[in-house]
Amino acid sequence: MSMYMPGATAVGATFDSGVVLASEKRIAFGNFLVSKSTRKTFQITPKVGAACAGLVADMQILSLQISALAKIRRMELGRDVPTNTIAKMMSNMMYERRYFPLLTQVIVGGVVDKPIMYTLDPLGSVLPDSYAAVGTGAEMALGVLDPQFEDKMSENDAVDLARRAVNSASMRDSASGDGLDIMVITKDSIRMLSEPVVAGTP
Image 1 (cartoon, rainbow, N blue to C red):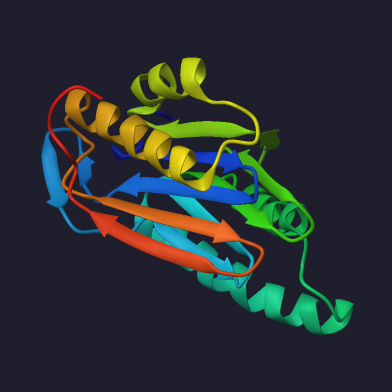
Image 2: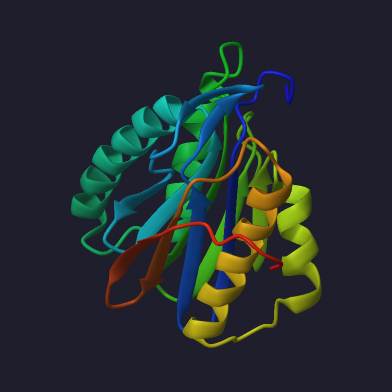
């Protein structure tokens, strides 16, 4: 699977009052650079977002379909759709496509009751995590996240950690780079920040 997985890095981390998702903007297949300005973080509902590594076109389709399904589900429930429900809906859709897999690895995070995050693989497994990294640069990103992640971090610390994790991957993984999208989700809002990938040590 990884042989065909387009290069990219996405990370996520929970903090005391929310979730931060971050991804770089490059798309590369092997040594072929496809794009330097691709958004890989998506708002699914006003309370839930997702970041992906892999085929962004697949992720765009997935996020649009799940977003539409979530609107229907919200009307049925009469309240915000929980993050785990969004993750499961996404997982089901990925599993249905398992013979023609959606080549994307996804981190889904949100704050409906409390900050929570899940990672999904291309066959739709759903694993809860406090922090995670997916994609070709995941190992490098986890090298930053593993020793430095703390439960109940402040928003600023979580954003800084996610930024450093993606920057670290971008420096060592030729398929990652060219800018950074950061999504900060709290119970009150979803904010998007875009910035360049910073060269230098993480």
